[in-house]
Length: 100
Length: 435
Image (cartoon, rainbow over all chains, first blue to last red; front, side, top):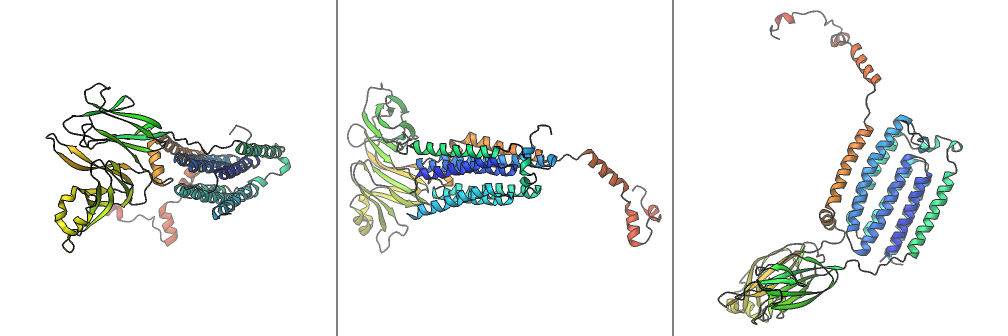
């Protein structure tokens, strides 16, 4: 039986790696993928705690997170495609002005 | 080191290395593939945490749908090497990477300290409520009874053989009083103190024996999950003799004797049997006097006197937990008959199974579920609207021009066949005038 702390620790490491990706990488798609990694890390912690407490609510939350992630990816990638059309680049450093 | 620990460490190592590789590799396609590896690792960890359904959803939705979408967009935009277009020196905010690294590392340290110092308390039981219900098995000339829980009326004159729904009560000691219907609450015929444990399910049964007053007993029901295609059966014997529960085999009268099998032997008077797991199906049962099994089996119908009551077509439905109450029903003329009434309740589905998640989703989390569905719909429409390309005015003009200069069909045919089909033929004259 593996202790819940281990899963929480792993979840934290993955979350930090995701945060690092968001802050350091300049490719908008990479930033999105890092956000997905952070969501997955949070899911892992939720499932670990659900297992610890024998409460199935944690699983339902993970279910919701996955759904929200799917919606977020659909909108995010559509935005990236739209930005690429007007800017010919998805480097987020070039997106420093609000005019279209 | 156990196999489980080894597997966890191996999978955790692969996940961390893949996540780090995802950040470090220059090619966006490689990053996406590394992220798929991380997600499959997390799905594996879900399996270790007894969440098989979520593991499958994780692979299907994340590793399947979402990552395919990512790869598709990367390929569509040709964005594999988007970051090397610009030389590093020309980047704005050059110091940002260093600062980000320092901040995330300090965040890592802080979070690790929080987990280590936080002393996650895994001992306290969070579920302090319990389920309680009342089953009515008193009857007879004394008339109807009202049921009071801690001095509050919860049931008015329930019928024989019926039960209330499970009520959520705080764990602890509760008082159940039986009061004749129409009397004041302090005219108590029978009272009992029920001690309910956190997370338990308890059935309080009021019944009659030959004595003048009703008796109250409590059965602690086990509603935990049952194996697939089976159900749990407990017998509560509210009569004054010991009983056994036998099942009549479908092949009656083999070799001239009745072929019966004892399933729950010798349930003592006014007590509950231990739980038995049965396969699903519909069976004929008999409640017989304990110790009379051999009489019935060996001597056929001679043992009829030993049969207390028959239960025709008792349905053992999968995933249920049944409490079969064998009780005296006092009739108005003073005589008594024994009835066996099944109280069927749903056993909890196995933890992490689709049934368990679906049940929680459609009861407690129905509104959030609907909101999420709406959100997905809006996201879908939003994605279509965002990527929809309005044809520009120039494109529309080009299309019109192309239509104008396109040659008539007749000249195309003429060029290909070598004959001049533009010459007027006799066709117009032969066609009906109305055409």
